[in-house]
Image 1 (cartoon, rainbow, N blue to C red):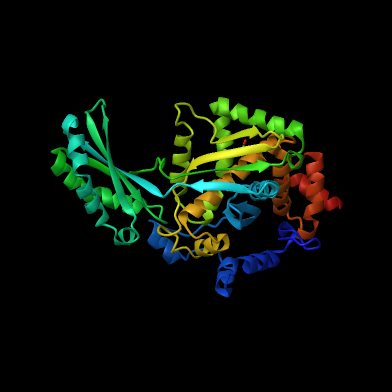
Image 2: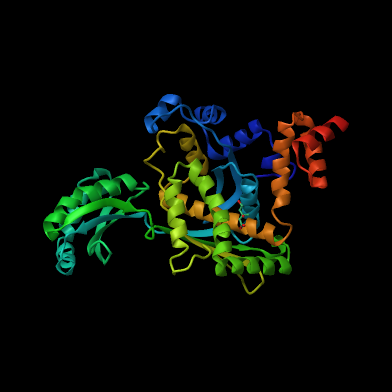
Length: 417
Ligand code: MEV
């Protein structure tokens, strides 16, 4: 993006940033107006979305730069309130470029629907359900003409038996290719639609009919190589591996390590209108898939001593459906991102998670994270203390140098300037 004497993205004014994004992403004037506007939906739109609405609530939207994923360059819109996340992602992405960026792969967008059957003879019911698979699938698919027309939709029926304190039960699961949708609605609709048929087949009684958010059939996995010299040399590479091993072996650390990954993932999920709770729930469950909570990433050195990071994570995301068509900012963010499918979006989001994890570990294994955090925090404090825009940098530099960031100190420094 930057010719030698061109300003870096973060050095540009808002107008210049929007102009860069407009020309790289091919945004229309209308898109630019949306970006410059109030940040989203009207009261009436909000009032139709949820209940008891009294207003709307906005967050910062920034752009992560430098990302190359599967050979394609991306500008990545991120919506997040935490400082340093966007800068950290962009920096990691820059370092990853030397060895080709991020190589990511995504499963098909398979959603899992569950129908719970009780008062049932679980010994005979499984065989009966499996025998009727094609009837069940046909009925499920009659509920989505769109998916059926794309040769997607319900593909497979499986069964599991559960013994529980209340009763033995049969869980009938539908595997549904949701295409470019996250698929919660269609999955729930299909589950509800097939429940009477399942009752007829098994002689049992169905209770819950709902998708599973444990999205193990729509994983994204991938890797990136971070050049040892760019990372800062052998010692820091080794210390990052120690940091990773800490997370791999201690759940108290792993939760924080994975939280850092989710900093990146959720920021992109926010900007593109995803169900972030579903993503969080699936990710943390997946981190415990082997019976012990551990890191969602893995880190090692290659033969040349470069740092290699890998991620594998559930990715229940969509590029259509939900609030995607409703919220104007989401439409523009998807345009900026330039993804053509939910699976491509998943690859980009996975790459951001890996980048974020790299940056967090690199900072933690070297100078720590407070210095970077403090700089932005100090900016907020200086602004809140009434320091005018053109003097903020001086006040911030002094407060960070003194390690004394407070409203009163900001005022004092400004008065003495
Ligand atoms: C802070 O939001 C995220 C980190 O704590 C992640 C980590 O510790 O790896 C910096």
